[in-house]
Structures are given as structure tokens and as C-alpha cells.
Image 1: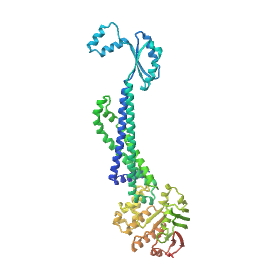
Image 2 (image 1 turned 90 degrees about the vertical axis):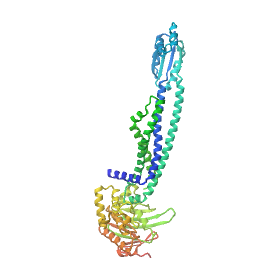
Image 3 (image 1 turned 60 degrees about the horizontal axis):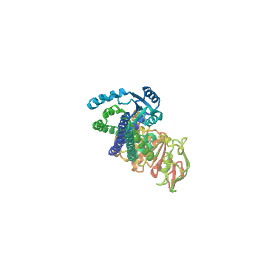
Image 4 (image 1 turned 60 degrees about the vertical axis):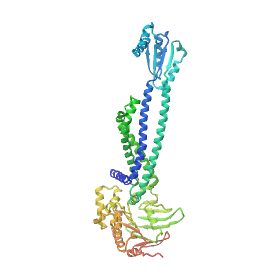
Length: 302
Length: 227
């Protein structure tokens, strides 16, 4: 079995070399498909990070009237905690709010002096609510809209970042769909080109195939080398596309770090290199093997 | 060993290649199938190795009914049948040795076995010294001997020779026929399809005569007569 397999691979490699420039052209088309696929993965990662970063900045702030007691506030905090949608509720007392305000404006002399003039704390106590999922804010907001709470709640601010994030998510979704469509179109093109290359290889090996049949070679032995040939295209294209991605990542890194300082593209690429290599190889091998199987089924009826 | 039972083959355009063919071949026989071009000799041989399916009738090779075998079972039968042709069907990019070894490679033989068997069989057909020559460096007779070596390397039970002397001169044709007789004497059944009357008449063996796809004569020690 191992001997047979090694010979099938050997014949597959022979066909690959024999095809010369046709093999090169096939690999180039496959590289294009794989590069788009690779970029789609990176795009997904980047946009995912951006959305996560923005999501972390959303919260709901509930401001309490001066008449509200701390007990009222803590009761509402407990009630919010019990909601499954709520991830965290932070209580900021009037004193804490003033302290934070002072800290934030310590360099602003006018504000500092104005605060000194005031005889009482003008800021309101509040609860900052964070949801487990950004989509849950509307549920929390409607919970806080309760009439019974109006006696103690001054106002509820539903951070307007939500609108920006929704729009961004929609744009990312559209871009992802476009990328996916481009990948599918290029994958089909690559499959067709590979399919045709293998068809040519089958025609040019006609004599050899005839003799193989004549001497009683098994179907696996006749079909196998052509499928191996397709797989070789996939492997070579996978490796080449990954090699091309290295300088692309290095060139893109400074621009990405300006837009998204939290993301280190090179580090991410290095850390996930093996994963990327596996994806590229698997996708390439899948395209090559599928083309090989299709061509063999169509043109090598045994 | 080989049995054709009322076998017919018609093509889509209603042309009939062979009709109602019925004969048996016993192990060790040397049978010449004669007839003009288009008489159906090659169709009959292609049906025997499962390259074509008959429209009617049954074909047996040993216990196996060839026309009922699944495609994946045919290689097993083909390994028991050696075949040679008028155009030799050698691979031009491989040497004589490599052409013979190729038949063993696709059958999964170990490299050491291949070396021994290929050299041995090339020795038998008298081409040991020319084993590294490529087909274009060999004469017609030598090419046919390489083809015989390749066909025999599996030690098949049957050797089918389809017009093996068709593209050879008289001297080379005689040598090939002598080689076929020698192979037959060593126990291999030989089926020779030819329209070379001198070859057939010199053999004095069983002759099946075909005209327009039908068997018109089947004689134990026949002569080439197409009337």
C-alpha cells in the first residue's frame, strides 16, 4: 500500500513537472484565490477587534434625583444585577462623581474655582450599567423606562455610540459578504483553471493511461496521479500565497497601528502563522483535489 | 478458460461489429483468429479484456463473466491477460527496461522484484543488451519484443496478440511468431488475431476464421482461407 501510494505521488509529481508553464499559470490563479481568502480572514479579525473595542465603550448611565436615598440606588443596583442581560453595574455616589470630575478637570482653573464657590455638590449619583451583549442595551433601557422608577431616577443616558457601532457593523457585514463573494468567484475560477489543466494533463498522458489500463493498473493507480497533481497545485499555491502575505503584513502594520493602536498585526500574524498556513494549505488542497476529482470523473472514465 | 457464448456487438449507428460469436479456448491452446480488416477480430479481443461491453451474450475468462464485472474488478482480469499490438504501444520517454518495469510498478511490485523480473523477461526475449535503449533506438522487431516482454512480465495465463506482425518485415515477423510459439510451449494460451496468411499457414494450429463479424470456420489445424 505504501509502495503504491509513493508511486502514485511520484507519477503525480512527474505530471506536475511535465505540465511546465501550464502548472505555473494554474498556481498563479490559485494564489489569487488564496490571497483573497487570506485577506478575508485578516479583515474579519481586524473588524472583529474594532467592534469589540467599540462595544466596550458602550454603557447606560442612570442618574438619580437628589431626593433618592442610597438605599433606593442600591436596590436598583441589585435589581439590575439580577437581569441576565447585565454584565456589570457600577455605583458612583455624588461624592465619587465630584472626585472624578475634579480629577478630570484638575488643570482647568475656572472649573476648579467654580466648584469651590458652590456650597453643595451639584453632581448626581449614578449607576453605570454594562451589558453582556451590545444588543441587550435596548432591553436594559426599556427596563429602566419603568414609571415607578421616575420618582428616584432623574435621567437615563443611552450612549449614542450605539448608532455608530450599528452602522459600522453593517458596513463590516457588507464588506465581509463582498469578500466572501470574491473568494467564492476566485475559488470557482481557480477550480475551473485547475480542472482544465488536469484535463490537458489527462489528454497528454493518454498513451500512458492506455498502457496502464492494458497492464492491469488499478483505477486508483490511473486516477491517483492526476488528483495528486491537483493537490500539488494547492500546496504550492498555499505556500506561495502565505509567503506573499509576509511583506504585505509588514507594510500594512504602520497604517493599521495608527488606526487601531490596540492591534499589533505583525504579532498577531506571527502568533497565528501555523493556523494561517493550515488554512491556506487546507483551502488550496481542497481546491486542487476537488478539481482533480472532477476532471478525472469527467475525462477518465475507467 | 475462455468462452464466448452467442456474443454480438452492435454500435449506436446500428453497424454490427460481431454477431453470434460462440467458441471456447482451453488452457495451453494456440488459436489464430483470422479475417480481413473490419471482420471483428479486434472487437472480439477488446470484449475479452473488458474494454467493450457486448450488446448480447456472455463472455467468460475462467470463472469470471467479464461483461458483468465492475470496472474496479477489470484490472485483476487484465493482469492475467498479456496484450501486444501492431503499434507496440510503448512509452517513448522510457527505456526498454523502464517500459517493462512500468507494468510491474503499476501492479505494486517491490523495487527489487521489478529489477529481477524485468531483467529476466528481457533476457528471454533476447534484449538484455538493449535494455537501456529507448524505443526510437530499436527496430520494429525489437520494439515488439519489448512489448511481449511487458505483456509476459506478469506471467499471464493468456497472451493476446492483435496483428503483432502487421508493421514488421518478413524476418522480424517470423522471429515474433517463433517467440509466440515458444511462449505457448511454456504453457501460456495464445490468441493471435492476424490477416497474415503466411504466419497462420506456418503455424498449423487451430484457426478461427471471421467474415463480416461472424465465425465462418473453426478448424483444429486450419489454414488461412477467406472464401
